[in-house]
Length: 219
Image 1 (cartoon, rainbow, N blue to C red):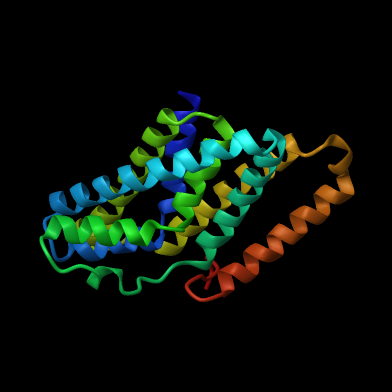
Image 2: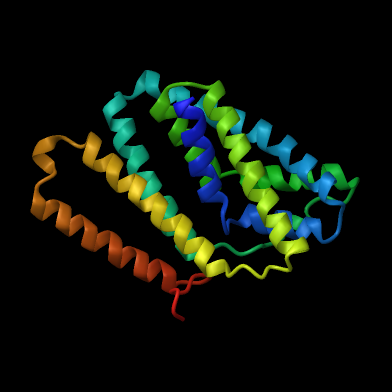
């Protein structure tokens, strides 16, 4: 259950403000919300199963400590990626057939290489289990995209997007920093190194927020 709830929580955060959440919002303005959720669910089940299997395989060929450190770093990267923001490109026009298959196929390809898929791989590698991570990440995706559809269609997007992005990004970065503190060799985590690392992450977050699609909360 630890792997399940950690996967649900972290993927829910990663999906907030993500391109695929924007894609779900766009589809919800054209198709019934039940069809959109069904298509998102089908695409997520297949996509994340592939990601979990790939992440679980890594533990057989790479030392576990290296994978845990890489996973912690990836969580920081996901947080910075969230601050940078995503733009909805041309995925919504990818397939023009039935609404369900339009949503499912476009969402599947939009998720390939996305940070939620990479987070799923990292979680599978960290917890060395398939089904709980698969179910947790799928549940997290469905919860986040359900929220996105509600915000985009029912609530008229009245919740400030910047607050959602910053909250999700900061929690993700905290998880990553905690992972590095836990898994790096004790000799590497001196006070000076830790302070320098915090400064670097803070500067990275600042510049990520200033790039395309991201702004500071007070802007």
